[in-house]
Amino acid sequence: MTPKKSNRTQLKWFISLLLVGAVAGTALWLIRFGLSSDDGASLPPLSSDTPATPLAEVTAEADGAASYPQIFVAAAGVNEAIIESVLEEDGWRVSHLENRVGHLQGTSWLGKPGNIVLAGHVELKDGTPGVFSRIDKLKPGDVVTLSENGLSYNYVVTEVKVVEADDLSVVYPTPTERVTLITCTGYDFLSNTYSQRIVVVAER
Image (cartoon, rainbow, N blue to C red; front, side):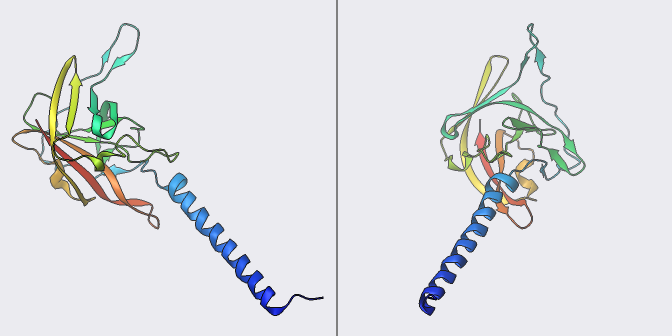
């Protein structure tokens, strides 16, 4: 006996739904685990007339380890080392950061007036959250602490915003002591790029 026409139609619909679900599931997997990391990405270049202020050199310890400056942001679950993100022709190199925070070469540093700009990944290559995955949850009044050589510097968040990827105003020098945290957002699956940045501004 052959199935009734209605049963065959239902079977075709069921198979079609399974195929659509499989394709959608594969696409979501690629977004989450295969393509969404900003590994190799670089931030827009700093204006060429901004003087470079290199990060304090890493101090070698007696046991061969290295002591790095640290950033601590309780409200965003951040407690990591800060390393240098070198300024290259097409922007700052951030592919080497992994789960550390990068100081954008050419921006200010601790104890000086100016804008200390720090970048971190929102997501790692394996799909796990990056060091700055929760900075969008920060709000005015939250505290960002930077420390180096036993000294700590506290900054209070004044603004959290989203800007376009080519907006250089967020890295400009400032007359006051400021920290600016930057990570990626606005992922575009088709181009495999992030079109926007989350920016957190904190004042000393």
